[in-house]
Image (cartoon, rainbow, N blue to C red; front, top):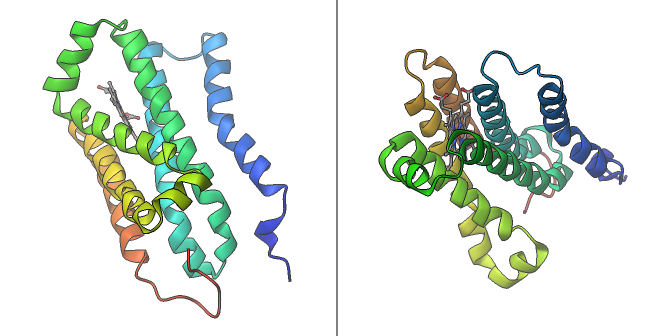
Length: 200
Ligand code: HEM
């Protein structure tokens, strides 16, 4: 029987849903509804969505195993690309609005502030993974593609560290993300359920 998740409607639906946070942010921006500190709000919301998409994309493999739904794999690349997309927006907001694209200020932050350095390395990894997520790259890189794409865990760990280092007092949220990431890693060891084809 054709799997529920194989319907052609799912991918466009997930794509459009993934754009909702951006549409909502643009709407709030246009309506001057970003609160007393719009720059901070833009940075925070885009950063939050980047990390959530990253964790969602990492949840796909354990979910396939837990639910015995191998076709969920169809959404992993899309969710990962949206993580990179929101991370680029997030960094763009910081560079354009906060630093006014001033090279001296940008370089100072990118070399001296440890939370920015962690964020930058995470972003670079996400961009490399996005650039090599095409079918042509998968064919070209062969077995090395999988090895390269395991770096997504490093990108996620660095994003969590980035958040942990920037918060001044209440570390509960970044620590929760760290816990979720650890659980997702552990969940990869869950044995395959039934006869589902989970070879990817
Ligand atoms: C060059 C790369 C990056 C730069 C310059 C950067 C910069 C920033 C800045 C300035 C803040 C706000 C700090 C504050 O409020 O004091 C922030 C927060 C944050 N960033 Fe980044 N970031 C980068 C990459 C990333 C990446 C790749 C992710 C996730 C995949 C990420 C996720 C977050 C999160 C979750 C927050 C906290 C949001 C909140 O408080 O609600 N950042 N980042």
